[in-house]
Length: 145
Image (tube, rainbow, N blue to C red):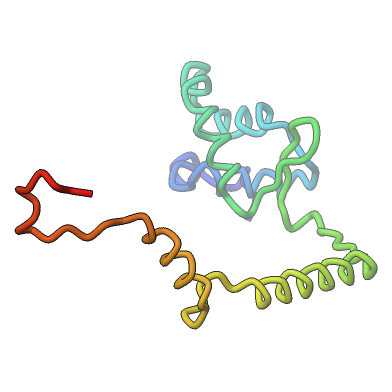
């Protein structure tokens, strides 16, 4: 379905992102957001004031819509027109794997939450050696040591 074949009423039923999708699909090339939204405003017979009021919302809409991708220099295009290249550096992956294994070994050696550790008992005894136990009956007396 070509956009020029649609009536104004039919165009008004489309959302801005759907119209942008159709424009980019028909044009077959990337466009600046200003030009893209200008085309939408022309199709919907929106005036300059409406353009100024809604361009920020249109930008946010394109930014969150997964069908679109922002390219360099402010151009927008359909994501389906661009492939993502994934380069896997095998040497780098090996290093990460080795580092992760080293971290796991360190965690196993240094388990500070081990309930069976006797170090806590020794520390607690050292902390308590200077404390004195006072009998509640002896609290009133002046002979405290």
